[in-house]
Image 1 (cartoon, helix red, strand yellow):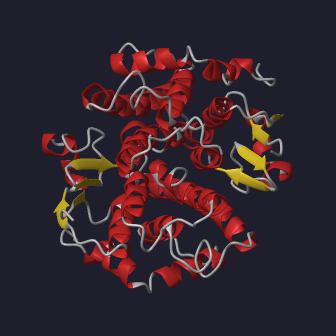
Image 2: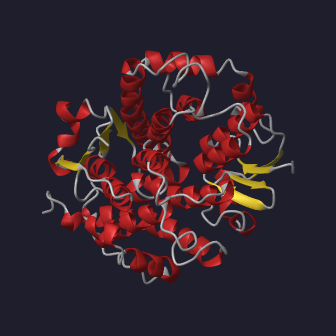
Length: 215
Length: 215
């Protein structure tokens, strides 16, 4: 297998997702850092990898891929073991839906570029930005907790006893939340799953504070 | 096949995506409307369908599904013809990535509930909300245009000559954009694809102005 190159940033939640998936699949890769706070993801060098100017991008087998969920599904299709999605279509729909509750309806709204817009155009100070962040996390995690606590498919992890796509998105979001002072006490079922995830070696190795560009 | 029930709102872009997919797959369904501007998606009757309080939700074969992209992939897996994703893993990654550029990085940031927060907490008037909406669309569509114009896989549609998941997201976003005065002249390749999509019967029948709750 060609050795992939992951273009990413230690603190980026979407980068963290792909690092977890690569670690779960046992894929070694080269790590290339782009410093988001310095705007390196908008440099010409990065834009040829992804015109969207967003990390992560994965160079693999002669092509470059963007969007963390699409990258993870590609990895799952090309390297089927261990699977990151259930074997049944209904289970896949549930796991994708749980993942998307975080990846669509929490994370993009709280992204760095959105917080920067709030500051620039609405004068949002750090406290107002933190309120914004916590608002969207709380809305999303309240719904996530309601589902995980009530749906019979929930197990030790988001879907049964195997780690998958929803767990990857959950772990990355929980770590992100800590930067804004959000602990998991409000969401006990979700928090228990998160605590189990943090014990898994692949999740630990992929964590922001273990990356070469960590500050 | 059990007749599905689509819980949705005529103007919702995510609802429109699922309606297009159902139409492309030739699935008849019952249409249940929840009025977003009246907050009906946060009523108890809707929250039992989806605790997230977001349309659409699809009742089908004894289960209820949420998140438009997950629903569309479920439909594609259960009803394979016509396929909405390419046959090869690399193609699927590309189509999912293009779809997610819209479904993750444009639409959720511009959702009704976000605009309402801007108004309530930052005093954003209609003009400021429209600037916000156009800003995220423009960033996303500039990147989409760069990819669609340069990547050899682009055809009459986002990926070759068959309509798929990325086209569904694109069409729904283009229709949404019109409400904020955004035409496609800035993005000629993307706009030409959009114009072709609007000629397709399934896209026409699924359009907001053709739904029973249209105002």
